[in-house]
Length: 474
Image 1 (cartoon, one colour):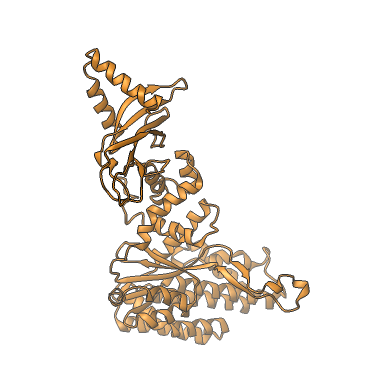
Image 2: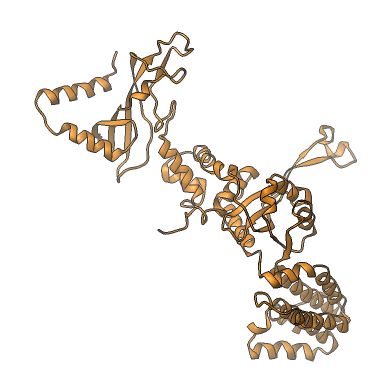
């Protein structure tokens, strides 16, 4: 027996044809084209008392009566049911859909299903949302239109779990798809949040009952290692939890041998963990150290010398009344970025401190000599020019007699093959650092992540938006 809603639709169509109303079919076709739900036709649109619109739908696709179990087209109707799937908003007033669909008998003897209800790809079986609404909820987050899952849920008036499931459906193909060949690979770590632990010894739950510390295993590491395509524009290719050599080597081992053989350069910071992983699975790749981390190391050496001099000279930590403390920001700046007045202030302040100030000044000059070596990158320098500037840096560190500078020179000597590769190629790890900023910003907008799997999924979406064209205004 037909439900009242379905009988109302049939009565309207019958009376319209009986009274010779023309143009009704044209109106139905126009409304169907405007709604654009594949396999469904608009039969009637009603304006409700609250201003919303009620759209009555009927099935127009004959494949809807094919049995999901055996695929045989049914011929006998069991009844009529109505569902109210939610769809994308259209217009300034809410729109609610009512789909009057048939329930069929499956007359195939070998089929285990006795009856079934019509379903379409646009509105799957047992779905309360249309397929396009669910896909749009996921795309709003994956493509960056909405910063977080909560923002997408509020915009479409959905729940957080529903939108997160949609994000997984949209983002999973991005993580499962094989990466294209890469010529320049960047490796860098980023902090994801607080670590999570789980006790492995139930008897050690009570610390007062056991003198030995309870054993625990890491559920979520505080560090992730990211792998970035620095030359091809593919964004962050993947992430792995942890930052040990085995963790980084695990991701490299998961790639195909042909993919690994295509990599010519690997850009890293001065981390021996990454060197061990690269040498294990990328023996033919050339290692390059990013100049940003070298200058950062030199600046930290200057700050370390300043703190040590203050402690020896004054017997305490630095204060804002100390002359060397007042110029601490000038010591961290580059020579070309200092005005003549600022350079004179830095120089005279340190000279007035006699020998302690000269020690700090020697450390600052050593930093500038190292920057002069790194400034040759991208200029196709001759080997003699590189050797001349490098020798000046080594001689200055040796003649200064400062332990921190000797340690800095030893570090540069250890990593010199990788630094020299940077001077000849000019490749940097700026792409990885930029992706780390995007990852931290995404986590900050979401007020942190508790699930590392969801974080890696969201990171993959956020760092590939430019490659997927989501940031292109056109």
